[in-house]
Length: 94
Image 1 (tube, rainbow, N blue to C red):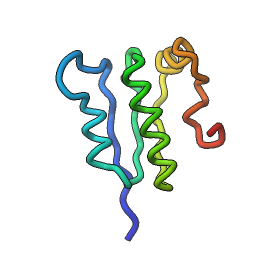
Image 2: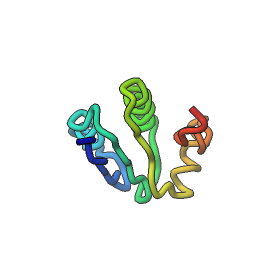
Image 3: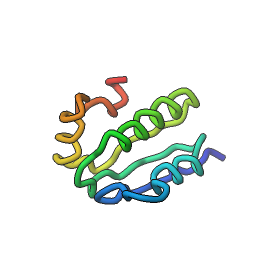
């Protein structure tokens, strides 16, 4: 039986202290298909972007899908400010 898609909704902002819940979720769901809902993200900082890029590479290496859902205009703009195309996380752009 194939693994069911695991879903996680990122909070508006990354916590300033303590472990990032996104990282915890990803560690617990390594090897499973994942959808990350980024619709509530107010801004994306470089640390969270590094987490997303690392996860994208890991999931691709493991042959599992990792996709973003509900990508807001603010999220796209944040990617652009960090020097990344908003289409980077779309499968055809990898």
